[in-house]
Amino acid sequence: RPNPTTNLPVGPQVKFYIEHNMLIASISSFINNLTSLRALDLSLNNLLSTLPPSLCELNDLLELYLQDNSFTGHLPLGLGNFAR
Image 1 (cartoon, rainbow, N blue to C red):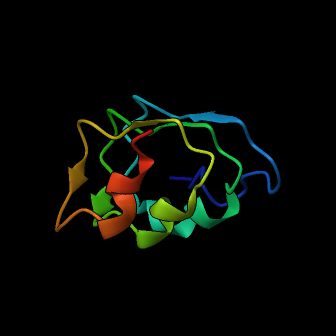
Image 2: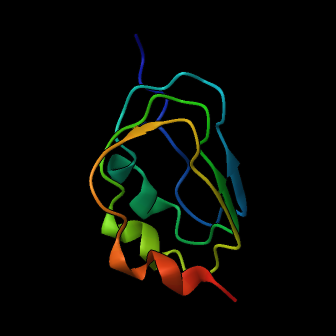
């Protein structure tokens, strides 16, 4: 089965919606290349492992949807800094 996260565009991305795709992966492998995101929807997949600390480095992020996945562990400490 091909991995759709291996050939993501690098550079400014404003919105990234891949909800409801039944992906089975870790988001840490591709989140570092999406630094200009304002909206990220990864809901309704089967994403695994913990949320990476690099998620907290998405300084422009305004919308984050992660529900209905298989994440484990604790939330990254900086995740609470997104509140405006």
